[in-house]
Image 1 (cartoon, rainbow, N blue to C red):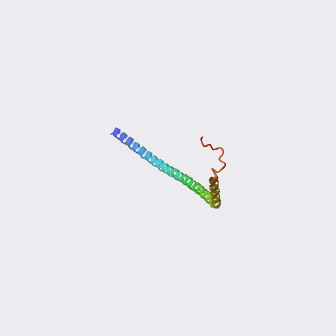
Image 2: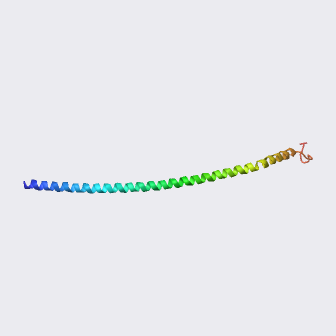
Image 3: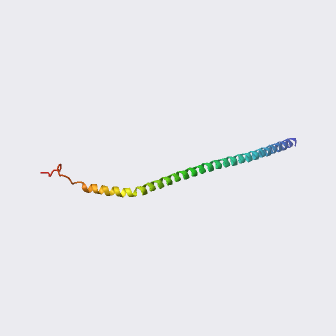
Length: 109
């Protein structure tokens, strides 16, 4: 009988210890979850900032490209009249080629 009582008390102590351990684990799990949530939130904020900066940089590059294209169009529009004159001059020059005294060209004889 006494042995049974001792065994029963021992079992009760073990159960209490397990309950306490479970409570500690529960507290630890809650703290771990809170830490994970805060880390996830920080990571999300960091990624948001990184993405936001990337979008801003992309917009700036795109605007730069647009400006460059507009400037190139303006230059080609301004040079458009000059280009037609130049091409006419080139045509006249090419028409003059082959005319000359004929010296230096062998007839192969």
